[in-house]
Length: 155
Picture (cartoon, rainbow, N blue to C red):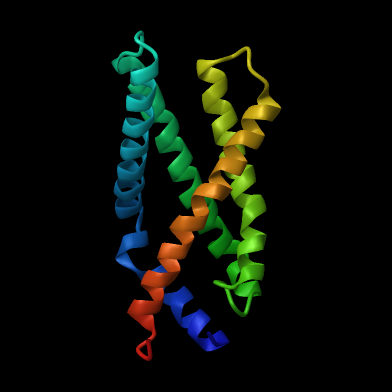
């Protein structure tokens, strides 16, 4: 893709209704709810003492996790995207990873220390940040594919 196509996709993304606060919260809550349900069901099959409160804790963690990933991406677009000719290129995505790690690591640490205060804050930070990077790969890939279809008529 050319630089102009990248910039067109960037403008379209930042102006789209799907990236407004309410839609983003609903979308990320949906991701979180599905993720929490899968995790909770998996744990319920293994541990008999799992109850609804475990699911609520898992849901809270998943909401924080998905919203922090979205927030980190919006911060990157706000502060750094204009420094890249191709904001959807590999270099741009590599520059997003530290922000995903930092934002998700901080929020994951705060949340996990509430539920398990005797744990290691460094381990929580790294686990939350690295898990966010792994999660963002398919989410960002699908975003770019959707933007390409919406913005570029020659595809």
